[in-house]
Length: 119
Image 1: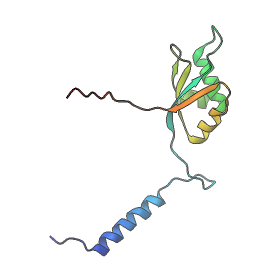
Image 2 (image 1 turned 30 degrees about the horizontal axis):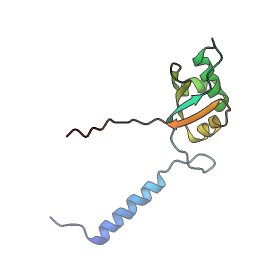
Image 3 (image 1 turned 180 degrees about the vertical axis):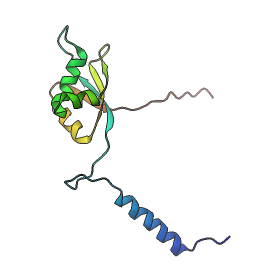
């Protein structure tokens, strides 16, 4: 079996790199459109007796422009230990949300693994 020449290998690598650049999604304005990510958003607690989910949805709706979009983006409401929620957001939506004065902290959702040294 014959191995490809160095020129063929270089050409294929260049072609793959160009295809990767060509597949970057752009919106109508020509800006890169990055995918949505899941974020954990900590907010100031609602007033006593207030509906927590409605409060969180309202904060999201102010950033996303509609209650319908907020309900689609909201994944989970936290109300026991901290007031906050998990939501799927694009970078522009995240930037708009971070301007809300009720938002105290935003972190990307991450999975952590327990590591032991008992070997």
